[in-house]
Image (cartoon, rainbow, N blue to C red):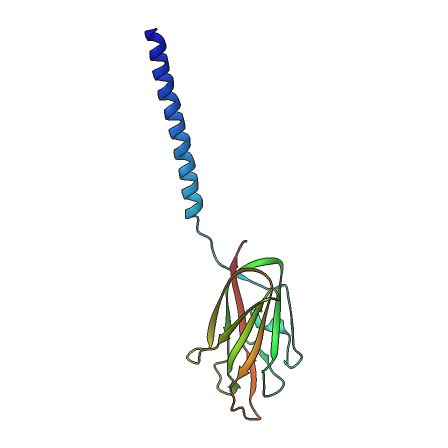
Length: 172
């Protein structure tokens, strides 16, 4: 009888130790998964389309060539747009729009960003910088940038446009 009690105590200790070890291992696994950092990568669209009042291909906005850009063929960018496509869908954390630093190009004042043909966000472009950062934090298949307004006092020799657009995201 005493041997049965001893065996039960030893068995209870072994089972408790085993359950504790399993629980600790699961806790460590959960902590490792939560602590894993992810890296942001530059995401390149698979395609793009735009209104026909620009002077070059919309892919110039995201290529790696420093001399590429997108300029209007007229003095206005108002109601012009460029749409980027991502196949497969990409999780985009944010994108950056670079305007020209050159004062002979009309500044853009306001844009509307449309994600996946239905989520619209209205943004005012700040005057103090030529780089504009826009949070997305969404898995998208398309993103459209529509120029709503640009500098009002345009002279006939000035054009409107964008220098670059970069997308940054991570694996979904």
